[in-house]
Image (cartoon, rainbow, N blue to C red; front, side, top):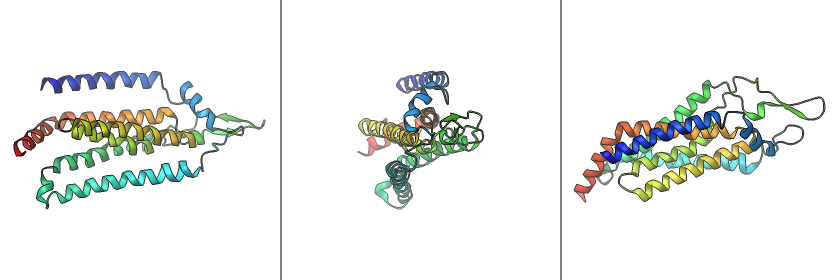
Length: 232
C-alpha cells in the first residue's frame, strides 16, 4: 500500500507541474505553437498538406479505424467473458481497458465541443498584399483539445490495466499510447487542424482521467492480482 501511495503522490506532482508547464510554456497559439506550425503553411496562407493522402486518409482514418477495431476486440472479449469460463478471470481487465479508454476519449470530445478555440486552418486569412494574416479573434472553433490524438493517447490506459501484474506489457501500452498520440497529433498539426498545444493538452487530460479512475479502482486491481496468484 505504501508503494501505491507513493505512486499516486508522484502522479499528483506530475499532473500539477505539467499543468502549469502547458499553461505557461505551451499556451495555445503561443510562440512554440506558431514556430512549429509555420513550416506547413505556404506563402498564401494555405496548409499545403491539408489534403495529403498519407496524413488525411492513412493517419486520420485508417490508423483510427485500426485502433477502433482493437477496442471492439476488447469489448467483445469483455462480453465473451460472461459466457466463456477461461475469459472470466480477465473480465475486469477487458472491461476496464474499454470503458476507461472510452471515458477518456469522451472527456476530450466534451471539452472540444465546448471550446471556443478555432483550428489553425480557420485562423489564417489572405491579405491584399498576397500574403496572409492570423486571426486570433476566431471563436467557437470547437478545436481544443485535439480529438484525433486522443485515439492514440487512450492506449495508455493499458499501462494501468497491467501495471501490477505484467509490468513489461504495461510499459508497452504506455509507450505505444504516447507514440501514437504524438504521431497522430503531429500529423494533424501538419494539416493545419491543430496546434501542438492542442495535442499536449489531450495527452494531459487522458492521463488525468486514467489517474482518477485508477485511484478509485486500485483496490480492485490488487484483488485481481491476488486472485490470479491463488489460481496459478
